[in-house]
Image (tube, rainbow over all chains, first blue to last red; front, side, top):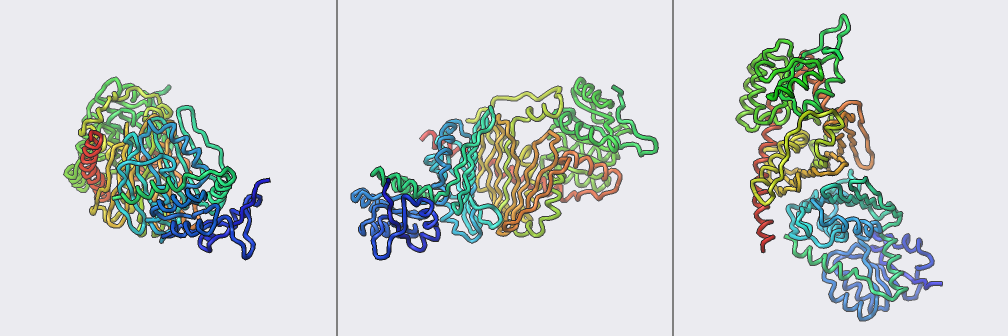
Amino acid sequence: MSTQYTVTSTPRAEESGAVALAVASLPASFGPVATGEAARISAIEGAPRWTTEAIKAIDGGASGIVVVNPVPESTAALLDAAEVSGVAVVLDQRWASNPGLAGAEDAARLVAGRAAMLDSVATAAAGSDPERLLTEHLAAVVRVTGGLDAVRVLRRGTHGYTVSGRLANGAPVSLQGVLSNSRPAGVDFRLYTDDGGVSITVPEPLAAWPAEVRATGPQGEILLPTLYESAHRTTWRRLKEHLDAGTLPSDLAGFARLTESIAHLT
Amino acid sequence: MSSHPQATPLGSPRPLGVGILGAGPVTQAIHLPSLARLRNILEVRHIMDVDSAVAESVAARVGANYSTSMDALLGDPDVDIVAICSPHQFHADQVIAACRAGKKAVLCEKPFAMSGEEAARISAVSEETSVPIIVGAMHTFDPGWLAAEANWGDLSENVHTIRSSIVLPPNARFEDFATEIITRPAGGTPDYSDVEVIKNALRGGIMGLAIHDLPLVRRFTPDFEDLEVLQARHVRPFGYVISLRSGNRIIELRAAMNKTWKPEWVFEAISDDAALRVDFTPSYVQAGSAVATITRGTTSTTYGPYEHNGYEGEWRELAQLALRTKQPPSAESLINDLTFAIAIADATVDVAAAEHANSHAGARS
């Protein structure tokens, strides 16, 4: 029988990360901490200075940390602290943590050399912070495509943004953010090749809606197996795997690259 | 097969006669099949093409007369409506000639001119002769689009984002589903390192492909003269990524024409609280109308699919115009559509040339 890890969460992490639901859906692995006891896992909100909060949790004896929707900031000190203490830090990102993106990443890699264009649109509710949307959008895109070249912001405003870039083979990339209450929130990717491509639709993590990944080629179209697991639950399940195996996730290193990309956006 | 298969029942009014200038793939794969569905109101009576063999062969398919000169077609008294399906550079002069020939209505394939000066000449002749003209922007005649237009309410005033995304296989794939083509223009192997090739491809993409949706875009962009190109990039082998700002509206145009079998043609207009999405059927085939969905909050209403597409819609409209049972579109509206397209094409090729230069400089460094 595997270990059950006790969990504590900040109210904001609970709200945006649906922590109680994720923990309840992994009852053999995680459970609430008893009053007065120290939890082994801390869930924190990824608001500014989240890395400081995470270091505090490490200093307080946490074995694992879940950061919900982190904003870009330097992760160097946290990475050092996590490695020294052997603490697993996982990031629960709005779209990049969707379990369907693993298959999407493979499908995209297979056609990357023949890519002709990547067109991606992220949608969030009107009034959302477009800067935050761009971070979440870019995190999902680089998860699938790897790093982008020549990324620059063409415009940004209260209704969204347009960002241009290039794939490794020079093909044009366009990322658009749209703020509206009448378009389903989520992110949509279209990677076109000379004879088809890969399309990916990633839903919100509010429910276990599956991402849809379709690979289109001369022989037809394949819908990759749909995974009815929310990004939140996937993150917690991944944390459990690292804790049981004693390994450290690469989330912080990947996020450092994303932070650097965003810092260099012109 | 009879040379005049479209027999008219006794007592019915005689169908209007149609003459077509240019008998290439558009005429063969689009107009003749559309007209075949409307035999009770329209009858093809004259086909003109500079290639006599093509003119004769295409005319024989519908039992029509044929010729190799525009004057012969315009002088044919059986022709009431003229459709201009020739190469772009001939459109303006042929529209003007058809108006002066006293025909009842003119359909000109898009674009109906290649410059503002040509458009102004057409406008003047149309006003002088009172011959109604429509441009073959088929999506504006699509019943799905028209149903959306009748129901989108104040969306056009509040839109902040407009998207047109077009993914198409080579034309031949759908031409072959629509008819048996006699001749096709020869293709080439472009040199993408040549900036002039890129510029021509972009201009061709806008005036030949984007132009299908630019009249739709213009419905949502009243301040279209205030136009800024944010990016314009060529997509290989044929396509574009174009971002524009018009007033406080953002316009995103995407196109990819390649060897895929899977077409996708989507137009979207989005505000804070409402969104329109129109999924059009591919070109050439008679695959029914677009499906339009208007969403307000989380409630969506869908219009279509209806049985006919915009190609057939054009011809239905032409018949009404020729019979004077419907008011023609204003020449100003057609000119504004064209001016909008030319403005985008002009601005886009300049930006694309600069982007191309930067891209190649980056590749060398």
